Image (tube, rainbow, N blue to C red; front, side, top):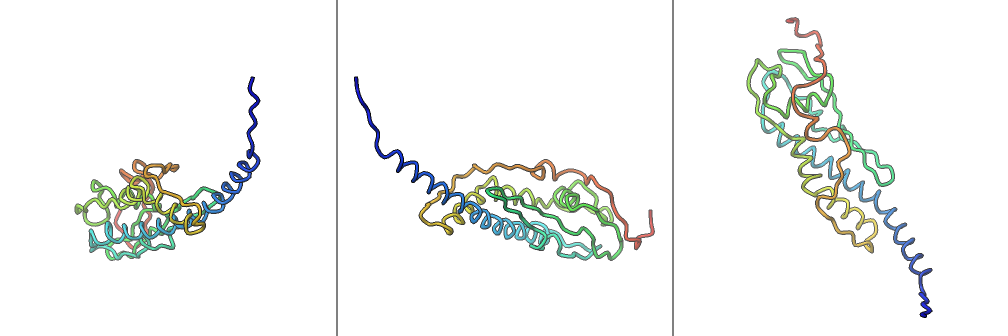
Length: 194
């Protein structure tokens, strides 16, 4: 018969508890870095993939899609909720109609098979949201941002990013923001035609 005695378990439990507390404090700091990188990335994709890809002639852009003030987030514990909503009103030159919902504008901008309010001209696909999601969530940029932010908060953690570990928990991913706009079109009254 053997009499086995393990020493140091109390110390191991204490070390694990201290490490867990460090991680718990670093995660929100890492998520703040992710949020900042999300807004920078999305604003950049709006600029290059939307604004630079097509010049409208029937309306003036308001810049609301690319305004970082319309890209916000809420960090609660170890969860980041990212919200992207913007005013859909346009400065009309010829027409005063616009989509009511920013998700509908995203759908219209991303897909080429829609007819906007621009004389039934074909407008190229401008998949800025898909490019943003692909870069940040599928491509691993969010993981790298999280690790960078956590390490900035506490360099002793030595967090390493692992690509492909992000869990996308939301409706506004690839499938939801495609196809025909689903909401109603509003009219400012400047276009009297029906």
